[in-house]
Image (tube, rainbow, N blue to C red; front, side):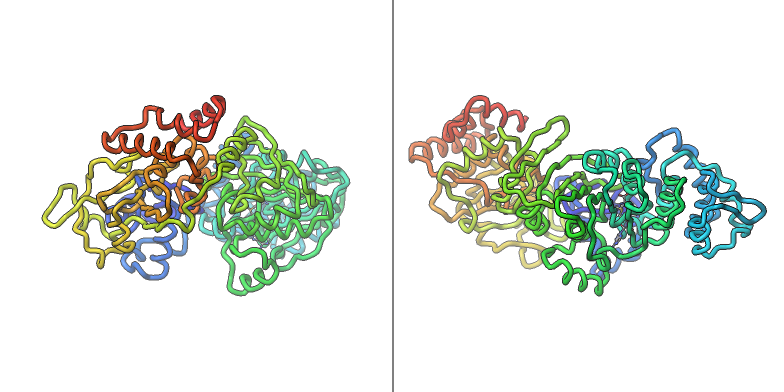
Length: 624
Ligand SMILES: C[S@@+](CC[C@H](N)C(=O)[O-])C[C@H]1O[C@@H](n2cnc3c(N)ncnc32)[C@H](O)[C@@H]1O
């Protein structure tokens, strides 16, 4: 099953894969509004909400189709093969294995014996093996297998490619998508792992990966650390642990030792340590049993979200020595989503973030962008964070992030950007927080039956996000008979019917706000604001549609949803009455003529805040 994240957008094909149904079925679910789309985009939140409805039995008829227990299909994590020439040999091996494998664990054990032989650590002859290393004898004895088993002998004859973790790759490929996403088991590509390690690891360090999988980080530690006794790894998956142990034994061929790599539930059973360095890609969005949830709540009371990567981050910091380093791969949403404010708050005061690196999307079938974060266990009031975002690199003060409402780690804000933002917020201002009513667009529950493309007796126009332009509403293309009592979601009718309101696109990467005095109805992703403060409504519309405010929004939230709490932070400056009048009349003109701003209003708004020509260009550039 692919991993679905609330804020990401998916294709119908991906949704089909997630539910284990055909593409046609997904199209049908969209048609019947079981799966709600916003401006032709399928959001993860809608997929998960439908999944919940199906699982809870709320939508009985879909249940038969959707494969609730998860997708049994497997796929190969190609990003994990660093040398593309091996792709073909791996594919051939997998085709052979998939046909014959009944028992993945047994298959892996035979492949590990093969791998040990390939590396000259044992010799196989006539259904038995010999080695002069006690650690390898003990290792294989603990597996409890019969090496003379003829059904599995073909596995000893396979030529494994020269890869740093060939058995791990095969194991991952045999893993069904369902269990992979359940356990968050996406192993990290080698280049990323090596980069994470090269900056902060020293040869005498004691290093750990607390959820090591088949040991990609442990192998990278071994490039720097000379003593295998200083390498530690844990994982909840017993087969991954077997592979990781052999990988490290093979890496330290000259030593005869038993690796410090064990199968445990790190979150529940690991609580003390003195490591110099920890690096990993922890599982995201893991599912926990009731019992585990109870334990986790008491071990990590500061984490309210129940998110596995947050638990792991707290665990890693607690296992470090003072001044030690942790380097983690996390979803980008960690930086700004409200749910993860808990973990950001935990870090912001007591630890020093050294670096955040925007890595984009790196895992096949995981569509979420990811970041790497390096944190030192050290309290430093004036810490500067280095941000690497594509080509650009800049540093910013950690304490600046503390001042934002949601403790957002805003990696897209350079020092120049910050000056612009500060100059806007430094003018005395109000906001819409506690100063407006909010109304979501109507969700009918069945648009096919309720909505028509032409007016009909008793109908009135209804507006989706698409018909909202900057300043005004376009001509309607949908009509409805307003029967709120039978719709799925309706705000109090009086809000839709307010004398004046602002209608805005909820699903959008830009701010798009229209003025309405016709008491029109909004549908789906068209939401409404009814301000109740002493501030001219048309000035709000003018400000929110300007390049300057679009810049504030994009820099601070980098979101494809315009959320209420985003809008509530936008400043409504206290201007002179002449300035209010000038903005209102410019906005009025645009509304009445259904026209877009030719730049006059935009420049006037820049003037109000005294933005320099250089900084205006920065804002315009972002909006192009
Ligand atoms: C995203 S994978 C990463 C593996 C490896 N660290 C890497 O980056 O390639 C996450 C790993 O966490 C393991 N895991 C999940 N929950 C765990 C827990 N509570 N304790 C230990 N390991 C866990 C999974 O089995 C999986 O191997």
